Length: 126
Image (cartoon, rainbow, N blue to C red; front, side, top):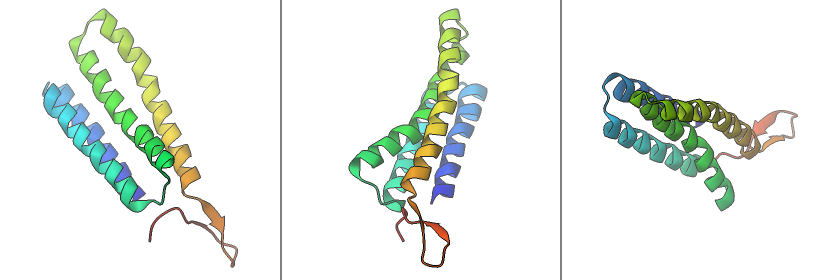
């Protein structure tokens, strides 16, 4: 579930590097990244028991990193001074959103102690 989610996110970054940077196919890259982000959102909805607010927060956190990376890569591809400044601002935010997503994931997993003393996440649907 979450491993699949991370795999789809990694594929989105691969598409940014290969399709956008190597092949200069901006629209194809953005559409592929958008498709991958829809898949991650669907995986979150299907795999986890979340409230509406938690789901919206999860979607924003998980999708904002690859979407900002696609925008930053496109701006970097243009090679103009104002665009370079935008890339310098956007790039650290990508890491911040990923850190926020992983911290939020720790919260929504709802780890609890079982009767036998083991700690298990109960926020996933079985």
